[in-house]
Image 1 (cartoon, rainbow, N blue to C red):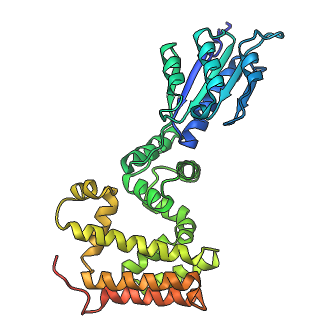
Image 2: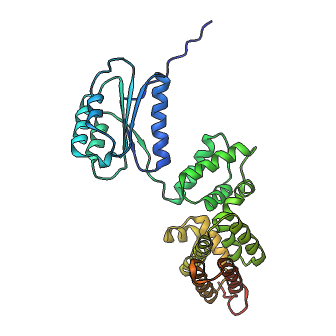
Length: 333
């Protein structure tokens, strides 16, 4: 018995990709192109980068193809279109062709918003691609990305990944893809640490974490590995400065739950929790001493010191001593 497989559904004739997160924009456009090519492998695709759209493109857009077949026009940077091209697109949107898919990528700003509104009114499919800036949204993105790839991940592993990678969505997605490919079962914090050790060291964050925790031997070992791996010394001082600033900010707030403090400071709750734990071993005087040492080391690695590596080693000694020596530690919390 023959089984009838319905043809792939065609993408809508009008599509708005709204936002300026590069990864999400790329995925949205690719989804539309994949759907068009699944429907018609010979579909003609014209992809115009910002500033490349011309009057000739607009003439072609509104003309019936002499050879048949579908067409896709991707217009990027629509917020910066000249008025004449925007108006030409508005005229087309009022009477779109059945065999053409128009994809307009608009950053979401006010300029040329009229085009987006007209496309929505005409029934366009809207694909959101706004930047992900809130920590909770990045957390949710990781969870969704891991699920999309067929894996599972603990909350602790999500936090470890974001702490090591930062906020770049492309890099987050790449790490998620690799972790799912390389890890059998649930991805936990140890799996992230094993995979991402080199990245964490190269970023300088592992050096900073060890120093703030008072682990001088570990910090020195990680520093050597980071420098041998090509990490710029200024990135190490920057990471240590950031860790100390987090401690100072959390300490200044005083009491309160990690969620209240996170909301007040605009920090991720897991980072607040870690800073609260670390802050128990620091005094205000110790933090002040360590921050002054970072300023000296930062000037050193930027040219004031003869040997940047020595300047960083001296900094690690200063920071760990500021945390652990009796005259600086022990403030009641």
